Length: 103
Image (cartoon, rainbow, N blue to C red; front, side, top):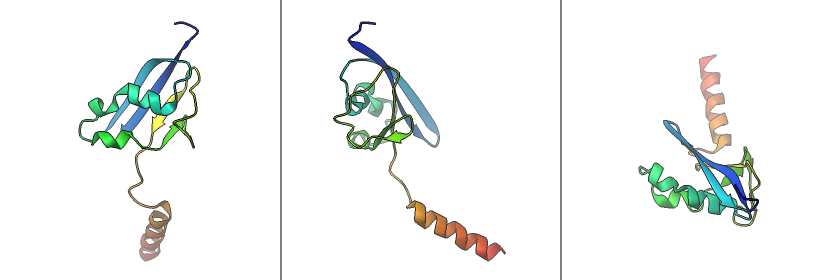
């Protein structure tokens, strides 16, 4: 590997299927560019390809504010996040209601 390249990973998961794609990318590659290079739509054909275009991204569990601008570092794992199905506050409220009924 040349000094002008980095090894990174791109990860995406559904409840029933997960994939981590290892890539060698040029230095200066952004998180969003790495996601494009990973070609996730071909691995997750059950999802519309637009799913990956604007999805929130993170590196090792930490959200990235500007994934189109922040360059990656050697060994980074870019994580593609799925949209929330339910607001976390609403989910906690529902759990609390169910627990209160069970008492």
